[in-house]
Length: 346
Ligand SMILES: Cc1ncc(COP(=O)(O)O)c(C=O)c1O
Image (cartoon, rainbow, N blue to C red; front, side, top):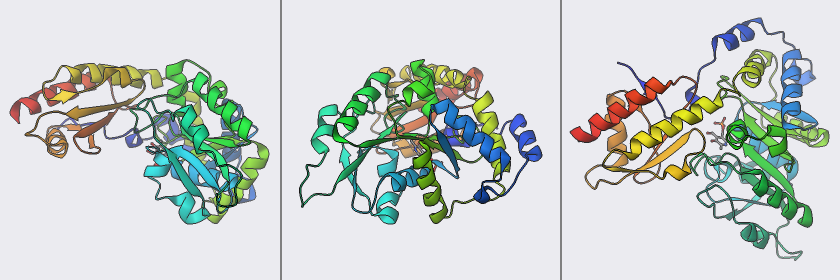
């Protein structure tokens, strides 16, 4: 049976060019700083993000954790979105491992935290309070339909951070998707950030890994943090080789994923029993709601799955579909046919 897997862009498999590069990768012991392929990837990533240095890590979760550990000490407070991946989906790792205290501000549907509320959340100098150190942004914002944070917003948060002596970390799991849809260069979009963690393993289709970018000093601290969480990898060049292809060959095609997401969203909007806010669709993530009382999101997803369209139920009555490299416009037509047929049958 033909299956279109829209559960996540993490479903992407290495491209043929990646497989070849991985097999041929020149390697060394990266904990000794001697893996030439890792070193090349880190140099490339830093240049793309306009930062001094970069660090190859095993995952987006590890990228965020080592960044927070590098920015904060025990008892320090971070300000982050109530719907952010770091707050929601990373086991509270920064609190568990680093003793870092989270202070959430409600995310708006466009992924922003209101500027006035960020400012209100910054602690005064008072014996009773933890000290605010860091603002964490997510760009694009996964649970907010993959919405990108634009330059103006990044600059406004940068102004607040500077004024209060705080740092900014960006969870940029899909940072290149943001830059692509906003039509700005990644280094411009990263200019206000002290650190950015970018996933190579999502829309960019590498099998493993993220890169954290920042100042040389910051990356030195992040490298120490990576070692203590068990992330010092040895001949990691076999993985970094795929990351190099990801940065070289997979960024420019992200616009195709965004076009497919629009096509999917427009098709879903025509189907009775579903509701979707088309203005929310800016990148490769599509959220929609099931409005029928007689069908749950779980049941609809299970039935779609049986018929060849795989999606993810997220929260009550909500479904997420993510477009990626292994999907053509024809696959989107097929997915919409399956959705239409299933909704008629149920
Ligand atoms: C916004 C965001 N940040 C971080 C991560 C974590 O990445 P990983 O699954 O590589 O740990 C994800 C994963 O989906 C994500 O969507």
